[in-house]
Image (cartoon, rainbow over all chains, first blue to last red; front, top):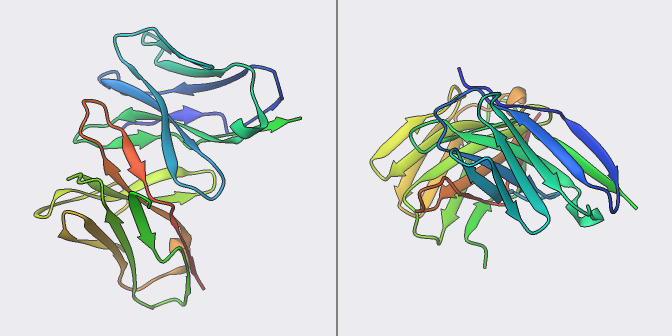
Length: 110
Length: 113
């Protein structure tokens, strides 16, 4: 079955880069996603990448996709305290549904 | 106003009680979802609906039922709540683009004693 794996916790200092990693299993996923959950809120789409791309950059965010290894990463440059949140990797799982990873809690300290 | 709203936001109930969680959306989307979130387990799909007449079970539907009363409303029921249904519950809708952007409500924190 489909499974999306992520490390559960990452701690960085303000101004550093953060890299959150994810592995997925469904090679037929058309898109892969990063969602962000701030405390007390629902998830919000942060960025996504089409499966025929290797990289996507959006301001401070860089998404890298290695289809051969089924590995997805999210890099946040110049991490700020406001970036502290839980980040979820997700893949298309057919029939308009998503399979989410367990989430990586990013803690940014001043 | 929020596009996806959930009521109640918090609920404490007792084992065996019937509970309904409600979700409304103003985005005009056809596709709606119910998830539960547990610490360390991420989000798991309970039920999803593509329109009023199309209801589908997700990964963990046992113990839950849903009703799609209208395009804008999707309710989740726990017929007889049990303590391991204590969790954070999210409703979501899906956008119309080619990619699966889901829009989440603020969540309902349910505690079953």
